Length: 320
Image 1 (spheres, rainbow, N blue to C red):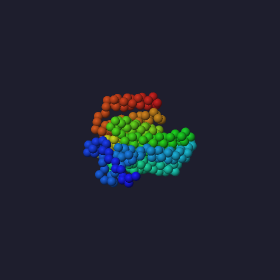
Image 2 (image 1 turned 60 degrees about the horizontal axis):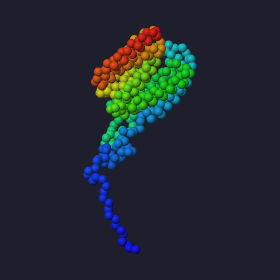
Image 3 (image 1 turned 90 degrees about the vertical axis):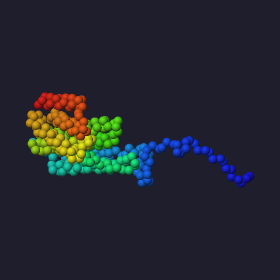
Image 4 (image 1 turned 135 degrees about the horizontal axis):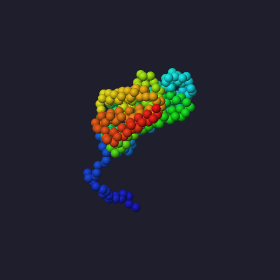
């Protein structure tokens, strides 16, 4: 047996030469530091990131649990008062509610600020908008559930209150995350979902404020607070500078508060007036969003909102 090692001929390379091959899709990092920032799978998967509503579910469950505790505290007839939400609520109720509202907004903002977003070169660009508004939706959703529990303070609120808190917080974070991930094809749907969720929150919160028939100062002030916060987030999709956005949101909140002042003189109590407040909120929002996006409202939008206003006023007149 020979000790010589058999040398097999080297096979020629298969395929086109390296210089003629198509480039690999996606940006090529210039350093190892940038390469380490890519998510699993490389740059083609850079749009995948932890969604805000995933952590928002945790927030929603916690808020719903605390609202259940508040509903238990407020349950009962209590003492008769001119404002229904003050009949069976004590200072401990409002103190715990204030802490809950602040915590819900702070956690929602914290979740958005700590999301992982990668740019085309694999770096992590700043994700904070010029005005942080991720807190707005959860704050109003939590406030609406608290006011609902305090106003009706019955056993049904043990179920309805936590349900409103959970659905409100989860839907606002889902709509915001959907909007942040929107592409050119899905942009209109994301805008519609985001605006729809905020308008539902406006209906709940503003209707409860009207139902309580608060004194001439506190009712409009609370309506101004609710509408301004919602408009601030709604205008997040426009092209306005931070100062102009705050100014527009404040002007919109002032108009909604004035609508409540006028509506308080109407001889009716209940949810039908809440639909009128919703229409006022929607009409102002249509004007503000059109200004923010530098475009004129479409005729279909004008017809829809005008028709809704006529129907709402007809319902209000019938209910009174």
